Image (tube, rainbow, N blue to C red; front, side, top):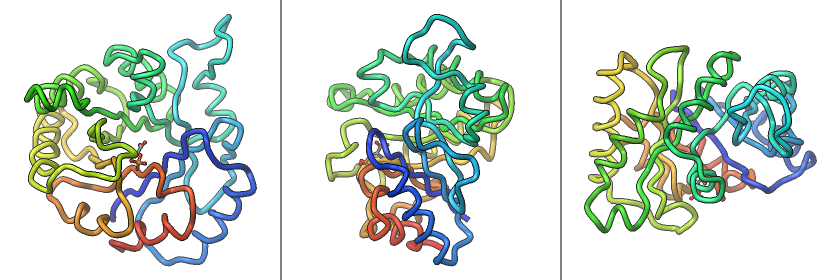
Length: 233
Ligand code: PEP
């Protein structure tokens, strides 16, 4: 069983979500499928894919215009929430510390955080990939609380149509698994994300410690997303 999570970013509509769920109901898979959609499309009754959000406030309630609290996500029926996505780190200034707070908020509400870590192109070029991944996991993943999912997303490869080598993915995932083990979080699912598509999904998911994938662009259309889910049954 693998976890296949889609991140719709600021795309889609209630109609395209309905169509996606309809198409997903026609396939036979043991994989866990999650769709992280814009806030207005979160509907806990939507199935078969579980529904998640793409971010959450660190605040519980109050004068934070434009933010969404974890209790609001819970009320809408979200089961998962992505925290620390590259775009939130880049455009909203989310740091590891903020990501950790968001993940804790989610855990306290019984929502599973999908915690993203990964290096930028500059960090990669400076030979800091493993260092950034290590601090990302240590600082972003809460040391206690319920189950989490970690996603390794090399930030330079998101939406770029390129991926790290299999060896680089393997090294990153092995490192993450070791850190999580030491944190008492052994067995935490570790997803790979960035430029996953039908053509590379099976290969990527055959790499040790890759428990699934987080998919952006190729999760929007059933004809692109379903081949990724069916790449490993
Ligand atoms: C993402 O944004 O989480 C992502 C993985 O995007 P893409 O698949 O488009 O690279």
